[in-house]
Structures are given as C-alpha cells and as structure tokens.
Length: 322
Image (tube, rainbow, N blue to C red; front, side, top):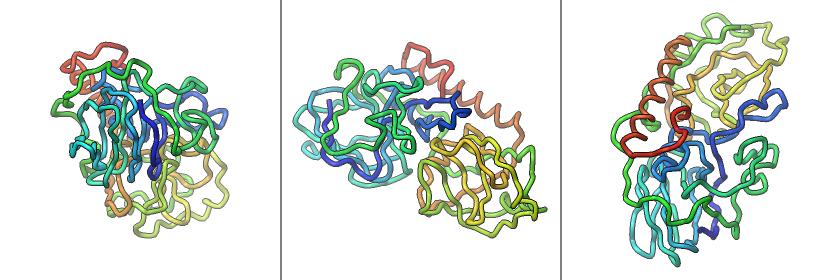
C-alpha cells in the first residue's frame, strides 16, 4: 500500500508490545503511547493492539501504491497529501489515492503519531509480537527503523475500513498537561531524605537526551543516599523513575529489564502516553498517587475505550486492551 520514499527521523512498526519476557532480558517494546495506538486502530475496526507505524517528531514521506483507507492518531505532525493540498488531521480515518504521497510537514503538537492500516501492518511475529525491538534487532521490519524502499502492506485489503471517521469526543488526552501520577517506590533504598518531595514539588524539563528507552528530565539536583553506590540491580518496568547522577529518567517501552540506580517510584500506566508525547523542552510535573488510584485511572481508561468502541460500532477483542 505504501513505499517509503524518506524514512523520517524514527519510524518503526509497533503493536501492543511483548510483555512476559522480562525474565529473558527482552524489553516490552511496542507503542510508547498505547492509547493513541488504540485510537488509530479502532478507527479502522482493527484490534487496538494491531501493528501500526509509530512516527517520531519528523515523519516519513510515503508513496501511495494502492488506493486505500488509513487512520492517524496521537501527535499532530502535519500529515498531508501534498498533491491534493489536503491535511490529514489526527484522530481521523482518511482515504488516500494511488499515485499520491503522504508526508508530515512538521510537528504541531505532541511527539509521536500512529499510522494504522486495515487489519494492521503485515509483519512477522517474534515472541508473540510484531513490535520492533531496536536494541535487540528483531521484530517489525528486520528489527530496525524504516528505510527508503521499504513497503508497508495492510493485513486486510487496503480499502477495508471507512474513511471520514472521527474519534468521538471525550476520554483521556495524551497531550494534556495534567500532573503525572507517581507511585512512590515500595523500597526507597538509595533515596536521600526529601528526594521524593523534591521531585513532586519541582517542575521538570524533558531533555533532548530522550528516546524510546527513556525520558531524561532536567531540574534540581536530587541527592542520592550514601548506600546508593552499593545497590543491587533489580527488576524495572516501563514507567519506572530511576535516579542516575545525570537526573531522573522515566523508562519507556524499550527500557531495560533490570537497573541498579535508586528508584523514586513508577509513573501510573494510565499516564505513560503523556510521558511518551512530551517533546524535548516540555515541562512535566508529578503528584504522588497510591496503587489503588493508579488502578482506578487504568480502569477508567479501559471503560472509556469500551464506550468509544461501542460508538464506533467496532467488534472484536478490544475490551481487554488500552
């Protein structure tokens, strides 16, 4: 359906990820913003975790080889069909015509956009997922980002799906600026007294040294406790806030499976899409939350997703996904 003319800054095939393999040292991978992935997919009647193209900051130029229907969600990276002078707004499904191009002229809001094709993007499954693991070099298209000449093909026929759909109003917005819920670490080993309070009381700026592994934050110095140098590595998950000497890092989808830095806490899973959409220079703030509050936020997102899918008359196993 598409041939890649220009791959953009970082475009990879991602789905809902491959949880369950952390004991093998395999990161979860998958979409950094799972909410926007679900939105793009449900606009095309796909399962919410179907493989789509995650586009970061500067999008690709894609030649349309077959007329078909696509959906875009997440960040507004200026998607357009230049031959037609037509903008492709996120949160919508669109018809694209063979012989034209899809390009992204520049970021307007957010950081990551998701481009869905009917049935998902055809890609081989590795450990039960088609997600690209850049560090391991597997999944997606040969375990790497897009290159010129690559082809993106839909699982279903390219014309499956309905153009002109809009995501219904309401529900979580991964581009809003609300404070992020931080569940304090159960084991605060290595944290100096007052470290958690300093994190919550201060604004933090997203550093340019951020990627799919983690988002590094710039702000006040957080002093480690003397015993931090002797910490034993322990398991970590996406959302973990580590405190290395260079400043806090919030782990994302390609984050490591173990780490030896002090841990301040874990960002609630429901808030990770907002971390994933924060561009370098964006300000983030935190508020402490309990496990019960984080679980309630997740259940709310699941309920909203079910309601939106009902309005779109989407069938399939979307009930258990966000």
